[in-house]
Image 1: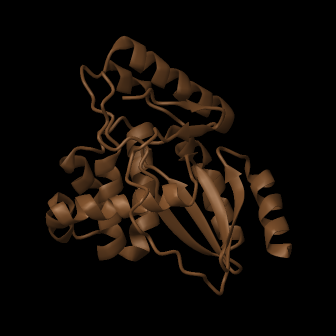
Image 2: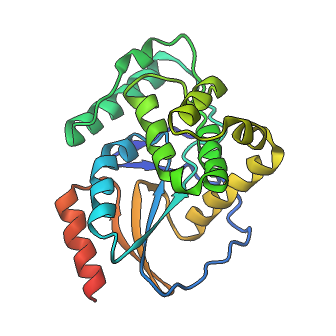
Length: 235
């Protein structure tokens, strides 16, 4: 298992995370769309969260919005040892310094943790189908619970808590989350990210027709993203 890398404003995807040869159809669109490729357990995605929220709001009349789940570390595999914890903590400190986002460092006092990013992504994918108007809020809530509150968002109890907070029907959520079908379905998002050339998160892209134009590939401040978005829309 290759090392988790979250340097220079971007969390990189290890090679061969998914099968990029699988076919995902990319349809051209009429109205420009803001595509966000991210992962609930990507620290730089948490760093850019407030900036992205503001960007979405400012350009809501010009851009539709779509979340694509990136698949940072599906399956995990990192040993929960001192070296890994120190590396991860350093990444978090860099994100906090750049963005001001809060982190609960008591996370690193855990005796064990499997840094498997697939279950939280799968949870978001389920919400996309059963409560599509709450998908983005659910994604952001999982980020906050994990980074700012030291809650284990791989734990079904925590996922139930998130559903309850957003008034999402957990009785509808739970069987889909546990199903083999959604364990496969979430990988369609991961594959889509790879087929579009996204190798790290956050990635914010504008789709115009059949063209994909990067706003930022990695963390960026709001003003820079706004200027870039205006430029892309004007071209």
